[in-house]
Length: 265
Image 1 (spheres, one colour):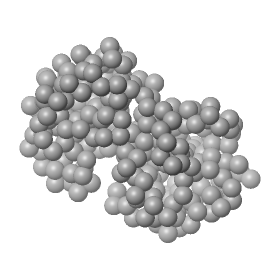
Image 2: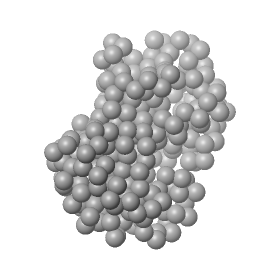
Image 3: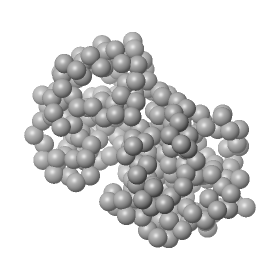
Image 4: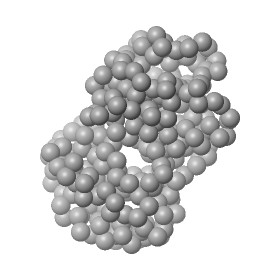
């Protein structure tokens, strides 16, 4: 039995429009029909990705959501939620207060996106993909309360013009104790607990089910896929990947159905 963990946006959903190449759909369905396990590893929330998979009639065994912070077993049962350390919360409040007039900021409570600050930024709000997720209002009072006290806080979001992403990421790295900053989209940086990634999600499931690393396959295209791709030799990066992600993978492919050319019996 093989276990395949795949990113969705930019990997299965190549153009960020929820269109899936029929050849990729057939490959996923055949993979499952052969008795293998399939899991989505995504930056999206469970309630955002589940309807998409259901519409495409894609079965799955697990979902690693929120870039590894929340892990679901089939049937929507949460088996892990990696919260941001409480001792880091005051640092986050100070950071958000300093940046709220300059950037679009948000946060996540388990599987719910929350607004913190909204500024006029056409590159974000005219993007048909980002506008579905970007903060819609200023929410400073409730935001500070949630960030300071909620045990469900697992992600912080920064929506940034492409030209400023690397600059902002440099500012954020090492800013919050016990956390790291990861570029998850060309316009999005997320802060999460420093040990959390999609690979972390795989390890949680692996510990639960006891499968061998040699039976794991991974596919992705973004910076948030790097740890997952590095974790196994059976790793595939998409041809249209974010910068330097190819260094983490064993193979470069254009579509996930091409994994069948490398799959070991």
